[in-house]
Structures are given as structure tokens and as C-alpha cells.
Length: 306
Image 1 (cartoon, rainbow, N blue to C red):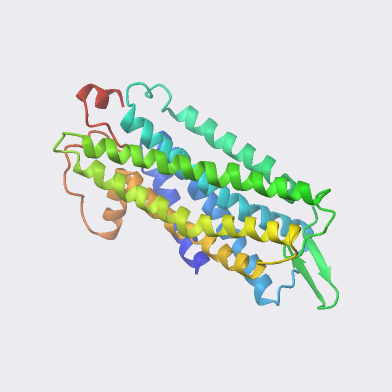
Image 2 (cartoon, rainbow, N blue to C red):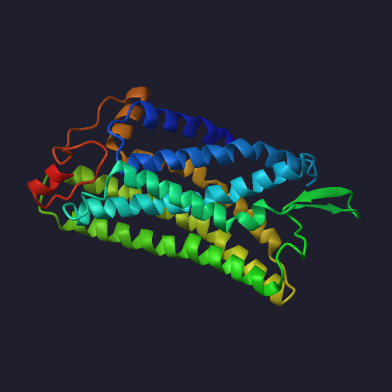
């Protein structure tokens, strides 16, 4: 289901973002990165589907197992970090429009995306350089990242440190930052005295709702259950792996939610989508002075800087 919905949805989103939205603001750069990330996961899902339909028997070799596994987790954590970048960009543009103007530029957004991927590659290096397949002779199958060799990391302590670092740096801190940024953004817009800022507030609330929904329903269950399972397995001999596998399905659903992020984050994207669907233009909102941005409604000079 995720593959069928995500591939056409994100291909369309990427086409609109790359071909029909000008200028390429920081938010658009982040959305392009998010769309490419989603397509990366969607492209490897067919291998995962075949693997499970084949009785959890991996027939594609060690290299492809590593590629599929790293792509899977890179998608989840890249989505988390990219959504956090979008929330920070919105926060700066609305709450500190003048002070942040010099930083909210395309080159800094590109640098942030590059840094994001360098961080992910470093964090997932233990997975990328290890043979993640395992032959279960009793069942006559070869698993892919379902059974891990005890020699993958030197000790139980290293496993605990590795997993807790992923949880803290790639989920918990970004989640807290995202919630704080959207809360401050919405409160600032609600305090605005501008009667023409309804469109801004509506999109800000919609964007915050979709992003927080993705965090709560897609990312949080997987990250909390993974931490619980590994701590319980390493130190107490109990396993919650069956629950963890179910939460992996939920983590894939963010691929279907991301096009809604683009819809609420970009007025230009809304216009293009409505045009293709035959719904006509959006109602005019004089609070929308420039495309594809949420603006501070406090002063006209702040709008002109953004």
C-alpha cells in the first residue's frame, strides 16, 4: 500500500517542486530533500515485500540487504531531521523575520541537507559495513536484518550506546525542537493583529498538525519500541521483536503523509495541485505577500525583508 501510494505521490511532488516552484526558498530545498528520501525508500520496498512473502528468505545477496536496510532507516531519520529543519525555518521566518533573513537562504538550506546526510551516514555506518544476512539452518532460510550476529558490535555496552545515541540524536531532540518551533510559530501568528493573516495561520496549523501526526503515529512507536526491545533483549533476555516489526509498518506511512507537508508548507504547491485537480485558484488572501513562505504579520518592513 505504501509503495503504491508513495511512488506516484512523491514523483508528482518532486516534479512540482523542481519544475514549477520559484524561487527555491529554504523550505522548498528541504521539501525536495524529503521527497527524494521518500522515493529512495519506496524504490527498495519491493525487495522487502518479496522477502516477507518468500517466508523471510532473502535471495538478493549481502550487498542489496545492506542497501535496503540502510535506505529504510535513512529514510526514517532523514524525514525526522528534514521536518525539523522545515519547522526551524518556519519559526525563524515568523518569529524573528528580520534577524534571520541573512540565514534563511538557499545555500544554507543545501548545506543543512548535506550535513544531515553526513550525520546519517556516520550514524548508520555500523549497519552499512556489516553483513546483515544470517543463515538459519534449522528453517532453511537466510534472513536480512532479522537476526544479528553477536560480533556486529564488540559488546553489549556498545550496542546500548549505539541505540541510545540514535534514539536521542535522531529522534528525541528533533521531536522536542519541532514541537517547540511550531508552538512558538502558531502562538506568534495567533497574537498577530493583522486581519489578513488567516491564510498564514491556517497553513501553519495544518502543517504543524501533519508533521506532529507523522511524529506521533509513524516515528515515535518505532523508536520507543526499538529502544525497549533492545534494552530488554540485551539485559533481561526478553524480546518485543514482534511488536517492533509491526511498528516498522507504521514508520513507512510517513511516505504517504509527506505530500500533505508540501501542501501546507507551500502556497505555490497548493495552487499547482488545485490546478491539476481542476479545483481552481485558492481564495485570495492579502496576507500572502510572497509565495511559499509564512510571514510575520507584525510589520510591513518584516514582510519586505522576507
